[in-house]
Length: 393
Ligand code: SAH
Ligand code: SF4
Image (cartoon, rainbow, N blue to C red; front, side):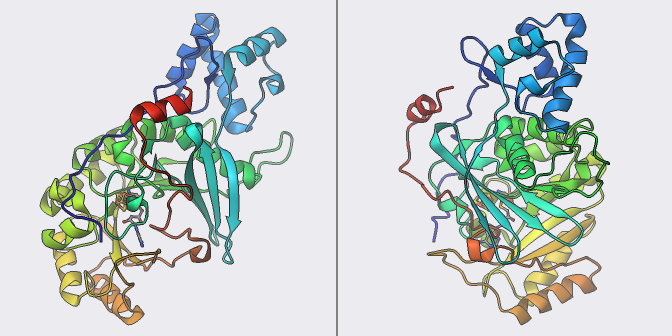
């Protein structure tokens, strides 16, 4: 089992945004304000900047264009200038696996040869893209495969938005000019439930979600984005105010003693502190309900007493409880609760007035289910300087 007493660290490399001097700057992941500044720095007259931002934004995020030459409503000289100064770059697909149930798992390569996984889960009336916020995770939840990966780096905003763009490419979802508008969306929902703790990479996650939510581009409403956190309390109010998306909490236990073992960050912000922070979330974010994620571990957190305690703890918080049957991974120190146990647990919660869906594991055959993600080519931990040198940024 992972050492639950290990210190909780947040020593993660964040890659600075590439500046245009010399090299070319990637426009993907810039907020509108940042894009404006970049265009002005490249010589766009200030008076035209707003209009140019709008045009380029549409090309990149509405039409999915990657080549400045295709931006036909811009003057030829201006397109040439843009191509000199900028690129439109997204992560590269290394492998794509398709599960028997239609789930797709992409392994993506990002700067420095690092890898992240992204999972697309098609359902009857929606398609959910599960994206990553970090390579690995600094936290060491003892039931999570990602938590065993040593190498960690924050993803840039470009790499986070890029995951959505990669999926739209692969699913052929960019609109075709002149074709009738297709309202059915393949990627209709985004969940930040892949690798990493999104609230330990707050600024990049926020900027990326602003791009994804922008109505003139990918245009996913904030209610179709769910951010899952292990409970980084100081960032929760900021999430409500600056992103406003739906929130999911990896709760997983009903006593501090058990949660300390399962989600070690609980030692820093315990159950009571976390719940207090959550009480304000629906009001601050204007959203209705918080999702409590609860992984079902045989004999650890799955008793009737746990279910009853859970209901008591969350009283007063508009909530739904998502029960996640534990997904096994090689060397995992836990077992999945029996099906009858999960149903009995769900029943107690349901009778107390909360929705208590049991999450059907998806893509298990390709190790794409919750908590199974981990970069395939994990290497020994490197120094910050080594990682920085490799990224070439
Ligand atoms: N770091 C964030 C988001 C990524 S984890 C967080 O912890 O919330 C996404 C969800 O998968 C979390 O609820 C996590 O607790 C759960 N999870 C992790 N490992 C799992 C496993 N082996 N089986 C089932 N769910 C797991
Ligand atoms: Fe990190 Fe979330 Fe896994 Fe915990 S469950 S180790 S916070 S990715």
